[in-house]
Image (cartoon, rainbow, N blue to C red; front, side, top):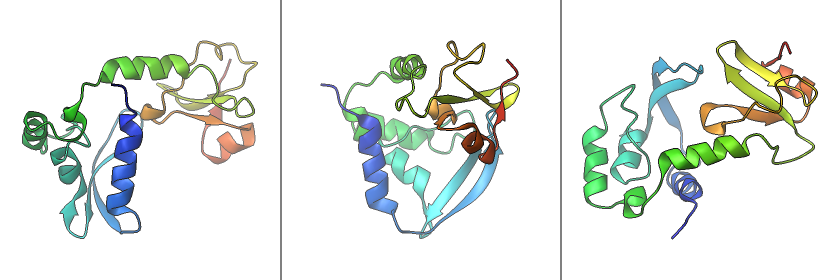
Length: 157
């Protein structure tokens, strides 16, 4: 059976935490400039709750705090563990799909590379071979001014 596990998890997180105040403690910054943090709502560790319920995976590159919780969720078939999912296959499919704008009127590609956050116009040299992986923080823009306001710069070629 195929199911949109990402939407399922998003709905679960929204139902649990929407409207509540979260406080986060920054632990690190990943290579794409994203903040890695431990967040709490009403004193409860949000990451621990989500991993324990099988709604998230332990991010062992930055912390081993949730490894035991993930194993327990897996053994007890909670959340995502209650089905078969192909994490890497899904990422590859998303990357391939990331070459075509979901909205043709918003076709500028916001790409994160070793040179930072850059955007590609459809007329740019490397536009066609640039994919967008939203899981890495990459995104689509509707205009150059929108991209620039968000802190992205135009690709050199």
